[in-house]
Length: 92
Image (cartoon, rainbow, N blue to C red):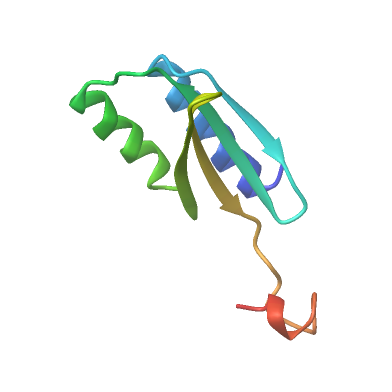
């Protein structure tokens, strides 16, 4: 299992223990975690949620009047640093 998927699975498990069931999806360049959030969260729970997603490469909150609030996080897969993998724009 790729390291990105392991990290994403660990984040999802931690969110689930906080009462926020999460799902993990594996993509070509990253693994993503998503969890639906209730309308109200205590300040303490928000801090715990932020501690979890702080381990991600990127995270955010998608809020719409139709679908509620979805927390998302992305863990990038490591890109080899040798050769011309994916072209010059993909090596960082």
